[in-house]
Image 1 (cartoon, rainbow, N blue to C red):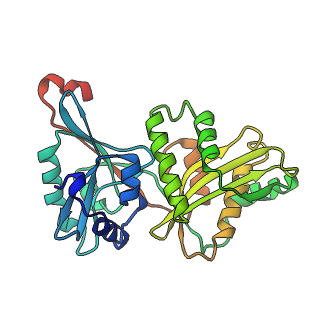
Image 2: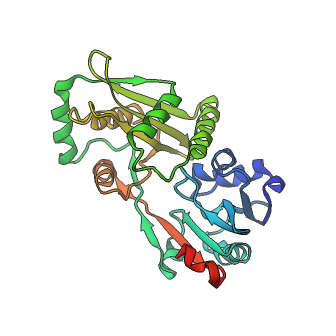
Image 3: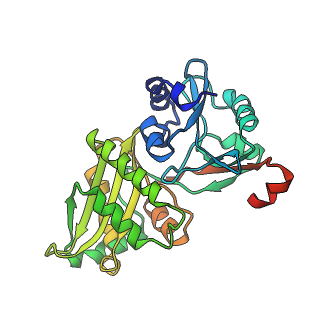
Length: 296
């Protein structure tokens, strides 16, 4: 295991970006923004890596899942993920007595053996044309509203709107988390990897929906999606995603909805998706008996 300052981030990112299961959440720029001071388990000159996002309570270090980071676990560019799991998890448990983290979709066999809870993650192949009847009915219905789809560069306003719209749903996300995500968006925007889109009414006086998408590893990630009260009866979110899919239809990428286990949101994503690629929720508690009950 290497501490943060000892990690060669260029080699780390090269591993993540050449892994068959590479995801943007494991890039060093993402981890630096959302989990400052992160550490890592590294095998054979960065042939496989695993980010460790840690905090300390009562003097005891533990692992947690950072905000806006759906999946972690092992990322590898040689062999199979099973080649690394036993050693990596042994190292992890020897350094941290408690963990509550998410593993990426490639840990399927590990999840079956343990077993672990699944989280939904719906995907859409952007090359696929057409939608199921459920979506088509709503797309026909929304035509009467003549909404406008627009490119924007104002990610800060989209983030602010997200905080205001969904305060109850995202109460666990702290101001520090949002500050980190804002810094991340600025860096990705500078790299040309931030996609921001809005839907307005026909007169462009009312903002109806907006989103922040990230690009990397052959995917477009749906990190923030806002549906404003005025946009709900006009089915503005259906229009937003339809336009995104048309815009990037020739990109050769996968659209990653980023969930969801929320019933209404998950149903919406599932209807647009071409499949579900679940991730896995990994938890263990080896804390001393006198504080073990604090974490259940």
